[in-house]
Length: 339
Ligand code: ISE
Image (cartoon, rainbow, N blue to C red):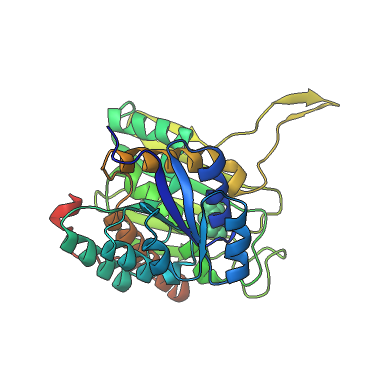
């Protein structure tokens, strides 16, 4: 029996992802309601709250968390604001779904990791939503069953039609490659130990100063090599794919093209425009699983350790990108809470 009739969720940040999660919790997720919204823009918070029965607007996360109707927190503010919001949630003993990144760098991620350990139990699920995508789940199941033997390599592709204004080379690692960092660690069940970044001559469609595309290489603790083609101004749509090369065969996901047509001497399908559309079901499943686990009094999914490890690989990745060198990833010993 759940201790919550309906889980009252405070959504921190009502930008693109936050607003999408508010809609999801309202219209799609069962067993939850949006009890509070937080945004530094008071008018915006009020506008969002006004449309939802029983929802209060706030500008400060800690005030929202003190609201008696709030049982859990979904953090979707910019990464730099995550640490304070996470520590406030710990102080209020509230379970959290935290959009990636956990925090923007390994030093602050480690502070969160230590604070959660002081609670003595996990409180946080990190929003690495690809782990909830139907294709990635099938690939993970095949690898875990050993269907094709030991995995030797992964080939990833990650293409965006274009980038928002102000997108930098470092953001290509922190915002985009962070997903391949997480799926690599999750699919192979291994830590990433070193990173290299190759930068071919850029496309003329990239904004000034952006080195696009890039080829990112990971080494894992088990000696596997993983490559990722990242091309964030490809112009034609959103494509994410992964091919696992194993001792006894290969398995590939991400060739989704919707309806396949033959007409006028050509064949083909369509390409999803962006990540919100491509991963819509994964986001829905991620939030539903979080709500269900929280209502059972449990925490599952990607942990603070996964958020910390991703931040450490991102830091190495940005150094590798800037220097052109192979950079080793530095990780502290994995604490017992996350084994
Ligand atoms: C964005 O922040 C995401 O998380 C998307 O999944 C990714 O494809 C995109 O490159 C990032 O900017």
